[in-house]
Image (tube, rainbow over the protein chains, first blue to last red):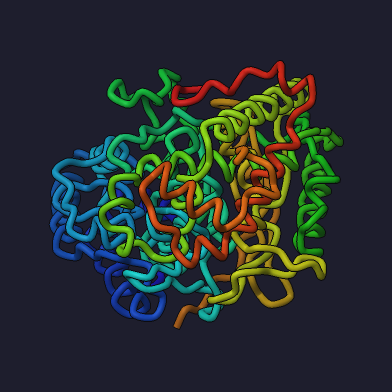
Length: 469
Length: 64
């Protein structure tokens, strides 16, 4: 029974909690039990706060018993990527440098989750300082993919995606600077939503690159992602990147279908340098959208192949700026891959950085023009399924490619434009590994992104669950 | 040495630039990554068309 509870979605559980058929303590114990059984193998968590979680679950139980039900997240155990500050818990950022950094307050997005009644069970593993896609952390150990323990979960929010996929929490938070929500979601078979830049406050979250960072949910299904975003989103006057945009009730507009929606596709980008099975899965998904009444047509984003160059320069330069004092005084405390990227970023000139920002503007304008003729842009979420642990390069259609660069290619247009983008599972490959479909929407139109993703999820049905034992 | 030409972005150049600009010593991993950095610089240097010269940088660090 405990496993059955932990394997439910929030959408399924919330009515049971509200009706007092299931208690927050029961579900929290069920999740903690799975963490105890499976996390020694998966290593999805850096910190598990069993005591704090049970205390919060008991408080939620008392509130609900007293008739003070706060909504669908009340009594739901969630985890936080270990970049988010949660009062009293350490925020390591997956680093040795911040190993003892205890947060003295909640990040606003975390405070919103707590105010909605969510129970924080712990902090999840990540690529060191969120600067990489493997989540093979030199300080806290590597996270394994629940679908195949010999493979990476993706990153940088790899612990969050693995924990959600293996039911070691009901949902999690992630950050996405170059695909760090969407890539692990694609590789672990979860739903990952990078909202519009400015939608979710970045305050209280350790930055990687200020102009590219986004925070959002990683969930078991689209409905749960909508529920989480609805709570995490909102204006934060103390965050200069935060938008004063109205937050719609995302979870209430999920079932409208896709009839009449215009979905754009750039075939020369989407079906180049991508695994054949993933390309086919995306084509199949688009056929399904057409059958459901959407119109799929070709669009051209002329500079899209240059996006990865702009992204690489901006992310390394901004990260090098944030890390400068630590890199000077504690260079040896960084893992070798992250240290090398920071050194590279330190060597770029201001001219290179500004050239990259000009290229970014070109891309933003091309997307803006394309969105005059489309409501969504479809592409793969990742060009490959989960690579084996230790592989630094991947073979795509017989051509070897640097893993990090390959994973950035489909992810970075969303970061450079700031447009909302979701990764949803679109099947398993021949090896039984999840593949992800990505949909990019118009600015602040997460509602259409979520509605379209929900229609696809409903038509496709759920992925088989992993067996992480 | 001129910034930006692919040919000049050698490991030695990277090492000296890092030392001068940031006071840092080049790590062995970054040394191995220098080809990738050089490729990025080379790609940036291809952006020299007249059209591109007229482009203003993207607005950043604020809500879109």
